[in-house]
Amino acid sequence: MPLGLDTITVLIQCLKIWMNGDNGDQELEFRDIFDAVINLYRMFESIKVGGNSNVQLRNTCRLRLNEMKRVYGNDLPNASARIDYSDLYTQWSYMYVYMLRHIHLVSYALDDTVGNGILTDPEARHSPTVCMIGGGPGTDVLGLSVHLRKYGHKAPLRSGVYVLDKYTKWQIGWELLHMFLPKRYQDGIPQVSYRGFDFKNNELSVEQQQILKKANIVTMIKSLSPVAAWLKERPKLYKFVIGPTGRPTSTVYEWHSVFSILKHMKKGAFLLYIDNRTGPQRRILMDAVDCFNFDKLYDKVLYDQSMPTSIFSPKANQFKREINYNPCTVAGINEVILVRKK
Image 1 (spheres, rainbow, N blue to C red):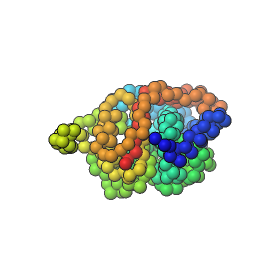
Image 2: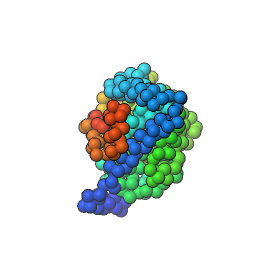
Image 3: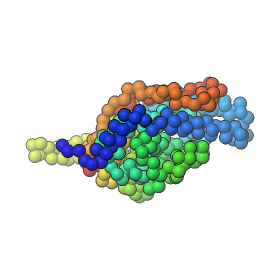
């Protein structure tokens, strides 16, 4: 099968990066993003948020950090374990412990798909419209931006970046973090718009549908696992299809919001899924993928993907000692799936 011009261009870019030993200085990208999280904490200290002293602030954040570890350390076993992210300290605690690992995982997975991923599509690699499902503090789009910058695509994401999340107060956390990000990210991601979304609502609102219909890239990263157990119990839907013998056969599906998301994605749009290997979330996604017309471009298990300690700056290492808590650097076992709607 002949290679298309876009694919050849991407392969040449990859070869140049490999030959020159130049990875776009991704470690610097991660280092600067994490330093922004620390600078946000320093802002809390300087303005005495909530009237707290520095000691009270540290103790409050450590309580939130321990809660993060308690919940996420068990792969979110039940819906009651979900964390309320309407609190600013809880948002910061997530940024400190998990955000960098999340960004690293997204960029690493996208780097591994360069031969047939979003870089092969001009519209997706040059200022795409992005929709994050459960995107929290913009982690998905930061990981996407690190990936795009590595391959020389630095155009600002001005077409639109959206987050559909249950906790729209993440918008405050993102805007505060955005103030401390390097200028290249402030300019590269000028605005992120948050809209309320809950997986428990089977159908999408008109506004949510319109966002998905114009998105070139949709991300669903670590967002299914918190609700997978609940989604698994949804009422059954019987879809009749013509089998190999020419006779109709029925397939059981669980109709829910994941079906609605994929239904309203536009032709040519990419969906990037990353989640824990444990639990029913893969089956939930693939039932919906099989119900619509998608090409599976990538399907791989990543085992214990870890970040190098060199990504932490001297300032970050000092802060880790000060707060006596280390960010998570190992991603565990995750499944990565990239599909494209035909």
